[in-house]
Every structure is written in C-alpha cells, then in structure tokens.
Image (tube, rainbow over all chains, first blue to last red; front, side, top):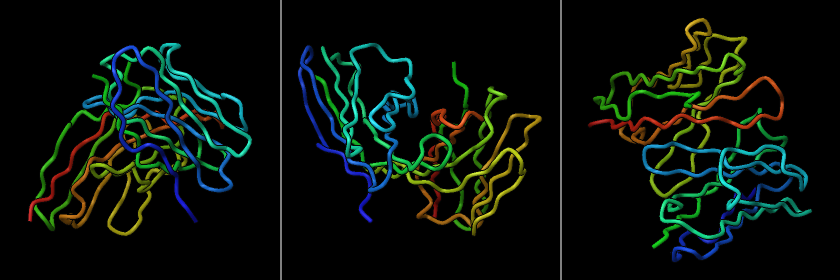
Amino acid sequence: KAGVTQTPRYLIKTRGQQVTLSCSPISGHRSVSWYQQTPGQGLQFLFEYFSETQRNKGNFPGRFSGRQFSNSRSEMNVSTLELGDSALYLCASSSTGGSTEAFFGQGTRLTVV
Amino acid sequence: DQQVKQNSPSLSVQEGRISILNCDYTNSMFDYFLWYKKYPAEGPTFLISISSIKDKNEDGRFTVFLNKSAKHLSLHIVPSQPGDSAVYFCAAKGNSGNTPLVFGKGTRLSVIA
C-alpha cells in the first residue's frame, strides 16, 4: 500500500510569489490535513479536508488556502509569500480524520528568499 | 496559546537506560493522545497512542502513561537504543470526532552509545 506522497520535496520561491503544494493520501483515505513545521514551533495545524470539504481550519491568514479533489488528492496554496512562510509543510491522511492516527508524508520544504 | 506543551526541547540518555519524555496539556476536552517520532527529512511516524479511559498503554519498549487529573502524559522507552534518536511529538485531540490533532513543539532525544 503506497504511503502519503507529497510533491515537490523542495521548493525555493521569492517573496511575493505564490506556491502550490500537492498531497496524495493513502488509497482509501478521505481525510487530508496540512501542517506547517518551523524550528521551535512544532506542527501548526493549517486545515483539514474531508470528502472535498474543508472541515477544520487553523489560525493562519487567508493567504493560506487549500482544496481537495474527488480522488482525495489535496493541494495547498500560499499567495504573496513572506520570508516567514519558509517551513516544512506536512500533509497527513487518515481514513476518517481527526481521531485515529494520521499518516504523514515526507513533507515539502519551502524556502522563501 | 499552546494547548499541548513539551517543556523539554532536548534530552540525552545513555544507551540501555530509560528515556522519559513528558507532555502537558491544558484542554480538558482532549480525550485521545498520540506520540509521533520524526527523523530529519522524513515525516512524523505514529508510535503509540492512549485513550483517556486508560492510564497506561504498552507496546514493546514503548509505554505511555496518562494522568488525567494532572493533565500530563509521558512516554517511556526502555531500553533506549541509538536508533531511537529522533524528535518526539506529543499530540492530542478533542472528544468531538472530527477535531484535528494538536501537536506539541517536540523533544529531541539523543541516545548515546
């Protein structure tokens, strides 16, 4: 069974640009959550999608958005990039979302210069 | 407002000895707790979990203890091995089925041979 796949693995963008990250969950999983990891801040919850609907949202500005497709694949978009957006972005999938263990991808390392 | 706190950023332990990683939480609505392990350049992997109806869960060398009155949980690793060196994240979720996981900032464990 394939795991959670995130693309690209690494990305370098300039301030002001926008970026789209992709996540393919484990087959059969309908919930996809996104997290931002920065040094010393742990994993900060961005949002969760379940069956193409955003079900939960963390405390991030509107520049951070996402969507989920009918095949459960999810994309995350960050517009007007800031230096502080440099982080590891992790995607996690689970069968129902929330309560059970979530399986993480390897993440996308975004660097904003 | 950190709802899940791991107050020790790092911990060093001799190989063969016990590693104890601590986690405190503030939200009394949390009823399910998980530990994740993360190696550099990889996503977090699920280690062990515990429901609030239990006070202990054991899986091989890993045991998680939950003290609900103190809002405290701990992960014990016995015996510690060099391969256990990683960052350990404590996570919690609420008793509403669809709430997201809330993570602590992590504790970096170094097991010295």
